[in-house]
Length: 68
View 1: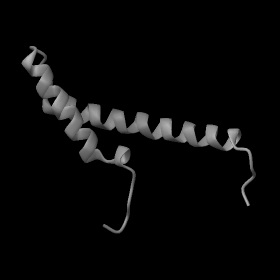
View 2: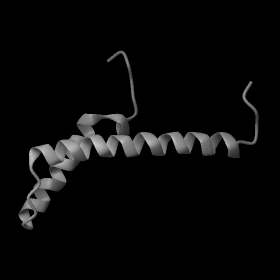
View 3: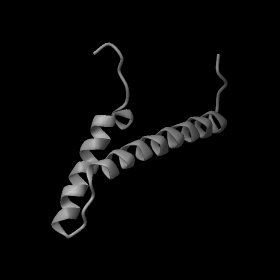
């Protein structure tokens, strides 16, 4: 792969995790269809991107040295 990205930015990882939890949920009577799973993946990626941005801003303001 030419362009590397962190694991938490991967739709495949989040899709797999949500599918796994949907499968576990169905064992307990919770039914999550494919379109709902896709919406959960998109929403999760948006939350992760926002959290990453906030963490970067926090890191910059809490740093002890300046950017050269």
